[in-house]
Length: 131
Image (cartoon, rainbow, N blue to C red; front, side, top):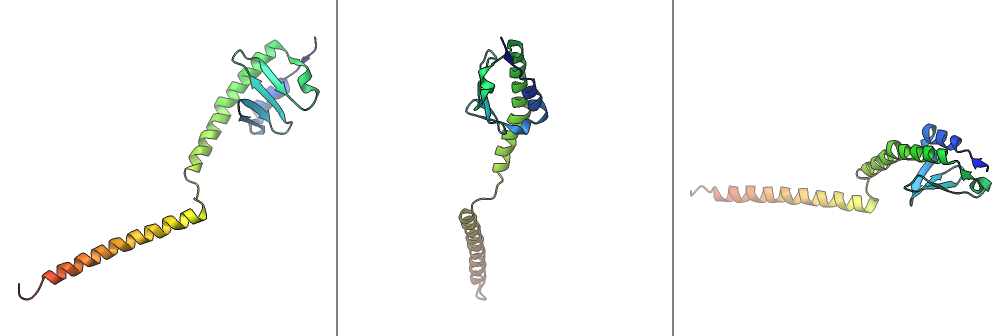
């Protein structure tokens, strides 16, 4: 029985990890539009718009491909997602929200200054020459 040779994909996972993405449990190769899903027992399901999905993956290559996928996920995809999430915490806010925050901050500082000025006037008012 003829099998699909997935060694080019394993090489691509190692050398060009940025060409893949993970969404809804499927590994997508962006350029070829091929999708792969891995079962807990390392079986590979392939979806493709061409004849690539007609052949089964050789059983020993299935295990190797699943291992390459897990390595890609742990060394490339997971750190990428964590870094994206971290960066989003520091992204600039939408314009109106940012303006509202800045204006609120200015109002807060102005009110604090007014309170300080009011206390100074009150302190000066208690210091009369009759005391």
